Image (cartoon, rainbow, N blue to C red; front, side, top):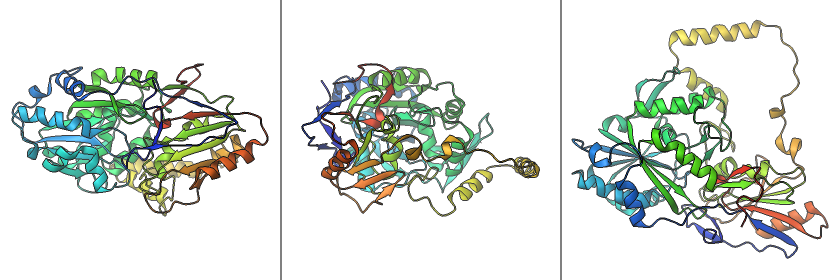
Amino acid sequence: MPPGNQLRTAAWYGDQPLELQFPGDWDVTVLWPHTPPPLSSDDILEALARPAAGPPLAALCSGKSRPLVIVDDLNRPTPVGCVMPFLLRQLGDAGIPARDVTILMARGSHGAPRREAMLRKIGPEAAANCRFVLHDPSHDTVNVGTTSFGTPVYVNRAVLAADLVIGIGGVYPNHTAGFGGGSKLALGVLDLRVISQLHHRHDSCGWGSPALEAAFRRELDEIAQLIALRFLVTVHVNADRAPIRVRCGDHRVYYREEVAFAREAFCAPLPDGADVVIANAFPNDLSLTFALMKGDYPLRRCGADASRVLLASCSEGVGSHGVYPIVRAPWLHERRDRLRRLSLLTARELAGKLVGRARRLLRPRRSAAPRPDDVPQASRQHRHPIWLYRTTQLSGRLPSTARGAHVVPTWAEVVTAVRQEQGCRERIRVLVYPCAPLQILEDRQGMGVA
């Protein structure tokens, strides 16, 4: 059965059920993922006690007194609070009290979330007893070495102060790395200059691509080794953001299996032939920025004449991304970002860059046709804009338009806009992706339909 058989919205701010009233002439199909039942507390405890690879946590704790737990931030749906009590119990059994445990939230280049929501994510036991730190990518980072790709690695100082580094994260589709999770958790505790360098150095792997041997993933693996990420807890969630699978231990051994699980469980058909495509940005609907980055993938794969609807709470408003600020980019962002990357170079590397730049400037210039990527997507591929229905009003106002999306406050306005776009059809075929940020679209007929 589908998880709860009901859409949800407002991740980390209620995880509320979302009721949509569809007109009678809309033929609606909801593409639920095929996920196993949610785990019980005993299931999670058993998973932590039996690592999928590598030594158990108790063995790693021997002689240690300053453990650090890196957790992903609120822009990832990982229910850290479901795991943390059992992790703290294991550390306590090894002689490490919760007061000596530091929890570092891997914010990466994302905007700073609200403190009450961060503490809600890690759970009441950890919030009450552990030291909690939010990573700041612009301050207090130290160098721990250089990768074989030549990237100097600056990491949060708290990582170096620890004598055991543990991680808790998930495995979710991602444009740059194909999938997040595994060693990519380490990216979230790096200096902003390094994060930008890594994103610009490597080509995008594509949404939901395995890409396990891609250069970006290989460099992330090196970085995870440099910061001594020894024990990683990987949590999969369903469309309700409830945990359905937990693996732990040496991520280098088990990560491939977790990517395969996510690709199979969340595989859904392409929206071919649909008159209306609805993508629910839950469980990545924290902000407008991440709703557009993570939730609109089905809307970019549908037909040119399809109406496109995005559902998102945007509980923390616009949000931000320090490398790709798709909404309200700061003044001179691209120049400042380039200067950050240049600041990582040695004098010799910088001189080489300047010489190469001078040579390019001296070459005869030729006019070139605009690349397809230079053409706005809406005008190149789709006739209709994206209608973003903001499902709650938990934060301040949003811009009326952003990256081709029109923000509207009521479902009735969405229905009216779709009727105008689709004209006088007798039946309107509607496809709903209930957890679009988790779903992988492939040409498999019948997959994921319920």
